[in-house]
Length: 265
Ligand code: ADP
Image 1 (spheres, rainbow, N blue to C red):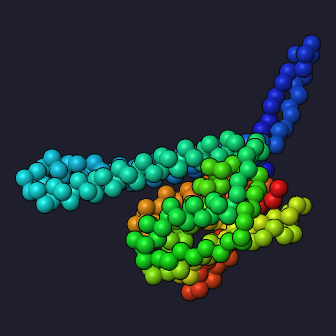
Image 2 (image 1 turned 180 degrees about the horizontal axis):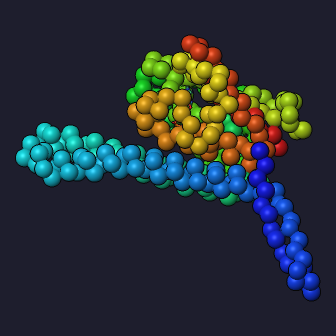
């Protein structure tokens, strides 16, 4: 499936002769298609909460105006839809920043053990609200990797939030960090940071597509838990910038494990 562009040029000094050259523009066409799909997706994702928001505002101006209970309920829903839009815009900005920086190596360094403990502590309230128990399995001491502290925090936050949100109620979620050891596909020693849940698991045919922008296994569930469909796309770009690997293992009925392997210093 190759797309060609024909370009005709008159031969200088010989007005009746024309040279036609053919250029392979498959990659250009594909990039254009990806961009058009992305814009269509973003518009749709923003339109959905916006339509709901406008509907509730109209109800507030009309039928619900003199009914305090209905007014409170609709205001609550309108605020939720507005928050959804704000989250989407934040995630779009993160994604575009991460993509722009992808070719530049991160210059900082991060202690993954400290990061794991700190992210787990920050998400403890979300976990307990969801009836979920967080367990940490970290090696004693610090584990330093070259990396961008903010971006690696975002990776772990996204993975852990997903495990809590999709891991099913009364779940146990484990964050584990291995000791530095040889890793397949890495030239240097690497560490593996993994987030394991005992949720419903993900069918095998979805797994390779999870890091696509806006790809969701269950759109309804994703919206219900406040997902934007961009979390794993952001994770993929950050991990790739850090010359790491993202591995997803999942079994229906048993749970999922998302692991990030990063080269150590
Ligand atoms: P979202 O914002 O929808 O959570 P993500 O990119 O983070 O977007 O994840 C994409 C989809 O992958 C989710 O909508 C969900 O269907 C699925 N998913 C992610 N993590 C898990 C998990 N731990 N267990 C089951 N499904 C998951």
